[in-house]
Image: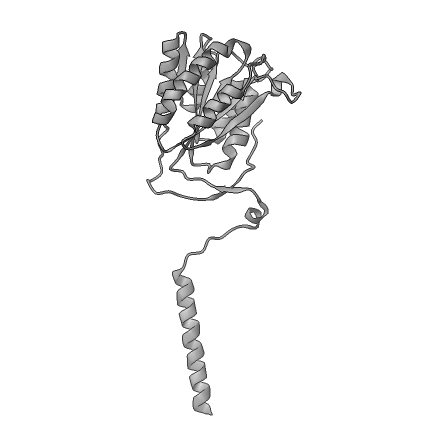
Length: 250
């Protein structure tokens, strides 16, 4: 009887030691309670760059938008396969009864090989009147980019021929943004305008293109789409669950 008890104790000890060793050899993800409360979660890699075209659809932009369509038809298939490209328009004519100063729409969420949807979005949006430029930038940062890992590089390519006509201050918004973020770069293609929006590229480390001819516009669009921001991280792909809703900067 004593021997039997002794054998049972030994077996239990060995079993417990084995289970401990197995548990120790495995790595487990630890999630805080706040993560479980989030419902819309995505995986995003820091090895990819998110590029969003933010295009002014106010009345004077019509000829330039047509040029952008033909240019992008050729450029988009050639850009890096590490780029997720999307399209947002602003100042477009809205059929939803929205104020012209809240008229901005994501036409295509950023993704790979997105030439078709970007061009379809440019074709389907209609020319409007006002220029809610600051509002569109806020939507891009707070809505469109919120799905992506905060260390993944993000690039805004702003195409416009004017300033905000809705009382917004894009320079002030970007200064506040850059004080808290280091993952966003803004390139500006200004068409025959002033340099008042140069603050956007200066503050974010982007490039400012002031163009006045078709060839200059085509060259600027080609250059900015070919220049993908570099990553300071290693070449490994990192994944993290990120909530769709992020911090909103006003």
